[in-house]
Image (cartoon, rainbow, N blue to C red; front, side, top):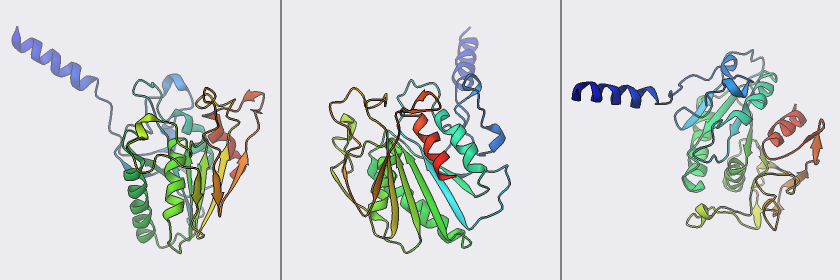
Length: 245
């Protein structure tokens, strides 16, 4: 009886363990939310290059950086599926940066920088990069944009990012948000701000957490609606990628 119990417990534990995906293939990015299994998120920390599509120009690459997810959020990463498919249509190399959103942003900022430096070193054919971050990912890439002093050209796009800081979890962190961002002059930086009253992540706040001062950067205010839909927190990624194509 005890052996049966332990065997059942073993199956239950390992049967519920989420896969640790090593590949990142375009055809595995399902557009149906009911079929999405966390494919983008259930993978190791770090950069993952997307494969399975035509890449005609490898001179510049694109890096996507996701945001924060509550533990019980069932479809972590799904908001990036359609944008990743659209980025693949540019026929450029695309990387997905998986980070631990429960850590202080400082560690993710430093790790992103080291990963990009390694990426540039290992891919001498690259002559520039786009780094696109959403929500907490936008906070990460904005701090990265301040620190990047390499001559290698980088364009940073921060989408629906609470740059002023809103999370209590960040109170003990060094990079927890601020009012002024001094973007390094070697970086081309654009902050894409949602109308915060239309943004489900921000609309309960008294002030817009995206409203900061940018030096050596600019911001673009997104419309309230797009294709007869409210242009909120997650849809903002798709809207920006559409503008970048």
